[in-house]
Image (cartoon, rainbow, N blue to C red; front, side):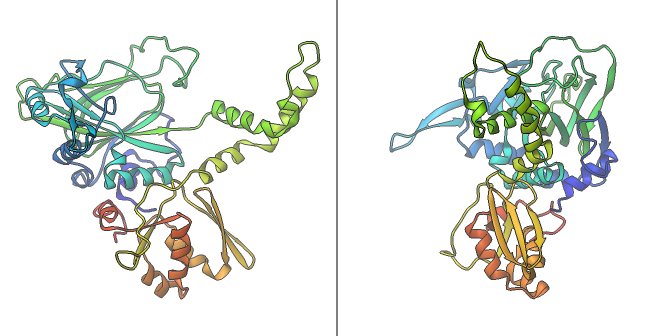
Length: 398
């Protein structure tokens, strides 16, 4: 899957792949800051906020370093049929923005096609689940206090400026559900400075950090807009939890524990279980069992489907096996004739694919293949709305 944001992040940080993710702090600048405007602007974010029914805590507002009560910026609107919708009070929000505040909208990828495609591209790149939270700060509003996250983040400054301070860890690899959440931030500062449009920063989980615009006093027209892409990587705890769930297939693990008996026989089965469900098996299953992403399906009611795109959260596994080729993705396993492989790779590349062009390029009837992939949910129709998410950010645009 080709995406300019992924390429730009790699070049900015001096990475050649996603392996450095989580390994250490990194900071750099993209060669093409204009990409930021194509990803998100302040007015486009506010437009999303205006048109969507949003709830706390997905949508939050902070002022003077304190979190506002949602009643100050959200209200319930009752429709003619009695349905209650939680909507932003845009007139209040305009006042807060003018005075200086921070507006936070989590999981923007659920509402915006450009951010949705960006997160999918980052998932294919990192092989981890990704979501994006957005932060719009105006005037000299304060940010959050010094804190750490339980996941790795890539921060892209999309507009304006914001001052950051990053410190190291006080606990190695902290988790959301952990045995210890205490600890004080270390004194040594890893990096401090100003993030400007096009700047990229990688903060591994557990690194303390804070951002603010309090040093922008008097800059009434100033603002900052940044996107934080969060990567929730799998740990040994996740693997063991998955293996423990698979142990239900073994009768020995379903039996009641005998307080008077020996646990030796049961303990001997544990290494066998770990060998059967190895780390590689777990990681592969996690990718292949993920259902396809939400997408519009018209079944050709409004006209023939001419373009498709892969809807899998992770790259499909395409394996040639003699006279056949197997495709595994989104919880599905499909088998095709071996000659279909070149067309399948184009249809499932993660890039928008024109069915007629795939047929012309490969000599394979891609229309039949596309219909099968659409029926199983591995591909989705490239509607105009979904196509908008690729324009200006994909290395190959529809």
